Each structure stands twice: as structure tokens, then as C-alpha cells.
Image 1 (cartoon, rainbow over the protein chains, first blue to last red):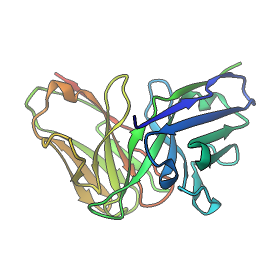
Image 2: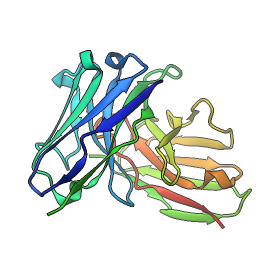
Image 3: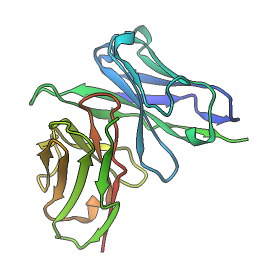
Image 4: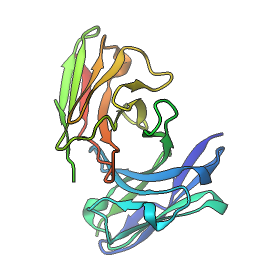
Length: 126
Length: 107
């Protein structure tokens, strides 16, 4: 079955750290760029970070709200995506989704997220 | 960074109505825009990419248009199963910003 499964969420105090994981199965994980997207309770979707299929630093991007605090990485041998979150703040409380970033065939040159995990809840609170 | 502004933030319409949602980019993004539907308690689902290309399996009552800074998502005949929040997302370059969302309800 083609799926993404996140883990690693939980309750953490402000200033603390967490490492999220996303396990991919049923598709050639190493061929796809990946994104992390979050959704605070009752709020909209917020893009967090992107990484290329190879994981090279030339294609790693972060939202301004997490730059310098979060680090995205991947292990293609283990079909896994990660998000290291440091210096967590109250406003980082959200469900964190990993999502496959797909390149379109027709028309070419376009991208979209066609596969999403169910998410893992991160709660930052004292 | 380019901001994505959706309007309205919510709307209520009757079954069978034509519904239009607008997404405006603060700078031109050509047609590098996708639309997603998120039903309550569910995952986001891709509806449209390249501003107007319907994803396979999405009902034809959904359509997208626009280029540059102004985009629209249209539901030609609103159905009860269309109750959801709709998001646009730009992807011409990072950051891959989402709009704030439009919540669609049945009147």
C-alpha cells in the first residue's frame, strides 16, 4: 500500500526539541521530493519545509517561521523523512503532515502534493 | 515573499449553486498554483494544479482559472459532499505558501 506514516509528536515544553519521522512505503521514495506541512488546531495549512529527492542542500527550503530552528533531512535507504525541531515555541503547536511532492506529467513543469500522511500532533506547552 | 490571499474566508450556498473562490498572489506566479480540498477531519486532497488542470478523479464540476496574480476555483453546482475548506498554494518558488482557506458550507 502506498502510504506515509508520521511519528514522533508529543508534548514538549517551550524551548524543547522533538524529532519527527515519516515512513514511506509502497513507492520509490528516493525518486520524490518531500514536504512538511503543519496545521495548528482549527487553523489553515502552513508549508514548513521541502527537501529534494536526493536530500542535497541545494534544494532544502524552510518557512521563515521555522528557519534556523527546524532541520529537514531524509534517509533514502530507510525510506524515511525527518524534521528536527529545536527551540520550540507555543506557536509551533500543530499537526505535522509529511507530503509527497509530485512532478506533473501533463502539463510538465508543475508540482503538487498527491500523497499525505495522517499527521502527528506536536503540542508545545509549559 | 509572495503572499496568497483567499476570499471569501467563508461562504454559505445552496445545493446546486455556482460557487467561486478567489486566490490572489501579491506578485505574479504565472500559473504555478494548486487548489486543495480538506473535508472536516480529513487530509487535504488535490483538486487542481497548473491553475486549471483537473486532477484525475476529481468531479468535473470543479474548475480553475487564472494566471499571474488572480486565480479562481469554481464549483459549478455545489453538492453536499463539497462541504470543506479549500486552499490555494503557490509553487513557482519557495516558500510554497498556502492561502488562508475558504470554508464552504451548505445553506
